[in-house]
Amino acid sequence: MTTEGLALSVSMAVAAGLVGCFAVMRRMTLAGDALSHVALPGIGVALALHVHPVFGAAAMLFFGALLVWALEERTRLATETTIGVVFSAALAIGSMLTKGDDLIEALFGAPGSIGRSEIVFGIVAAAVVIAFVALARNRLIVALVSPDVARTAGIDVRRLDLLYLQTFALSIALGLRYLGVLLMGALIIIPAATAKRVARDLTSMLTAAVAVAVTSTLFGSYLAASLHRDSGPLIVAVAAACFLVSAVLPGRV
Amino acid sequence: MLTVHHLSVRFGRTVVLNDVNFSVERGRALAILGPNAAGKTVLFRALIGAIPYEGTVRWGTDARIGYVPQKLDLERDVPITGVDFLRARAAVERSRTRTRSRRDREASVWRALDLVGVPRAAAFQPIGILSGGQFQRLLVAFALVGDPNVLLLDEPTAGVDEPGQERLNELVRRLQQEQGLTVLFISHELSVVYRYATDVLCLGRGRVCLGPPQSVLTPALLHEMYGTPVDYHVHDH
Image (cartoon, rainbow over all chains, first blue to last red; front, top):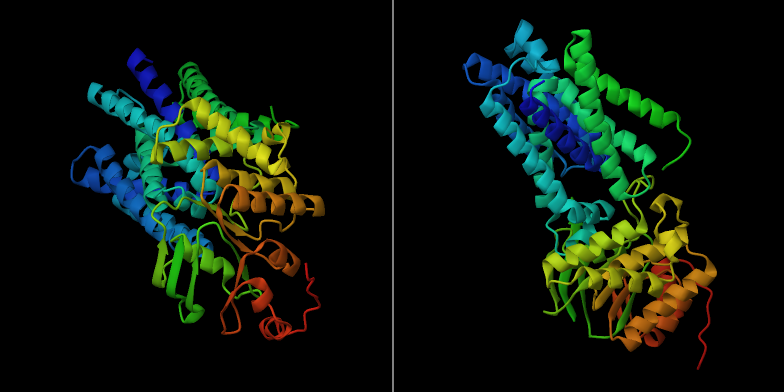
């Protein structure tokens, strides 16, 4: 892997680990999963129009985040149900619009050679995600404890929710090329779920999630190179192995 | 500090609050009393602007509200400590109003913990490990970190053991009487209302009453409000 490719995959992993922590704590893992599938029709449309698939995916993700945000207004059960419908529908429409190899690439990623502009876009986007988590961390925590309390502290909870979802969507868009729609969702959720098992305070959770995401990305890419396999599935397999270890460990660190 | 005119809240076709009027002067302690489903928590949520309502709610221009909710919609197994929560709250306060130094913020966290009597060792534990009483006191500390001059407490002593209740009630009374905080609290316990409230607002069964506890809480009214005779007697001090 080139130095630039390495920088891109590490920054992507850091962003995924950080965003995932709040997704896991906000109990929105399903919403996150649904959101990642929304990218699929966007990729299909972009390919049909001969536009770069990342732009189609990013546009659809932006729209998907708005949709999930609007749906969150309703009751919890209704949201989960509706999101289930939304993501199945996105998958169906996406697979109708995208054919054969393109579909497999969109779902599981296809690293191949990555252009300089794509690397720059990726690193900037990862920096935006990381900066958002660093700046909004305290507001996100207060809103997590109680949206009502957050309101009395002058936090615009609805706006914060939307910003968070957009950041989540941006993280998905980041990993599309490497990991694809299915696997990027996993790289966001699995390290955070592992961290939640082992950490006992916020800082250690964020640190552990980033560590698991980066380790999985690096070790998975290394395995892929030595075994001559695609990197995406191996990255997620390493992350899942970390989670399994944390699940059988007795306690928190 | 607070003036409420013709406040009504509807959820769909159900009228939860109908034409509630009251005002609270600075430094008073208003108890909100009423049977289950009378809309007590709904009233609080309307007061902080968390739900839509009809009518007017006017806070004093300098009101800084500390809200202690009754229930949290939060998984208790998140790896977040009490100190994480309080630090986050202190940092949010800083970015909203004035710049407080890091040391100031830290000091406000420890002061709040000391006030509510949560030991520091417990505050460094993940919140899921805390007992119900400690968690409740942590929520009060969370409100205090914002340096409020109004406290809204939704059954703050629910699930707290007897000495803990006493301590919390005394703390609130001290904040009200010595530091001049305005306090609004929801309670089911008439003895607490008699001891700590300067005014009472009762909700429920279609009627609203307002006034000092001694004149408002007549046996007839309590019977009417709760539907069953309530056993109590008034001490003359």
